[in-house]
Length: 113
Length: 112
Image (tube, rainbow over all chains, first blue to last red; front, side, top):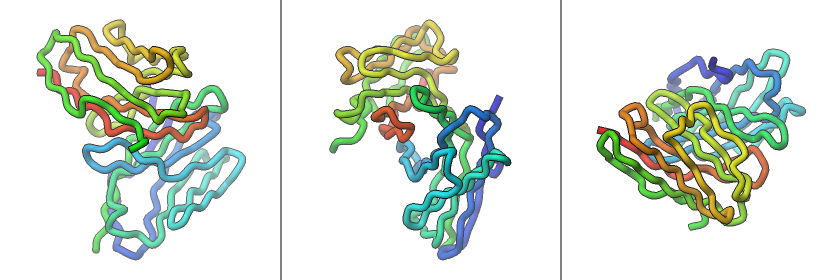
């Protein structure tokens, strides 16, 4: 039972354009959502997060949007840069005391120069 | 370097052997997690500690797996009688009672 789903295994975007990565979840008990970036042979690197009480969080070129009614979140990267090429994982956790992360299967983002 | 450190980075072992991995978390973090990642999948939760107490174990953690965190500092993950299905990347992460966990570079296990 995949509680966090990333339905696009891969995405290619021109440098300078916007990259939009999507994520859906099924568990209504999830309270916090995160995006991680992963390069080959390295561990995931935390990018940005959002609490379920918000619908948007922005950090530099990265913005995460949350639509609780649709159980959907997205990560926007603008402008996209070649160094953004990596696998991006969406993750979700419960409330305080239950912070273990449930990950999606990832989306490989390729930025085309 | 004050990040999460994992050793070894790579381990090749014969089926049936025991292996042990070590994780040194960020020093002030009281929570430590172990995850496993296989090809094409996201990391899957195995277990976590708050200080030295192991608070939760996933059903993925069979009785061949054991984890410890003596004195609430570093942690070890041992796999006994390894099987080919244990081949994966084993990831350690730490946090300060918030969901934003910081991961180490992982230990890639290959069982031959």
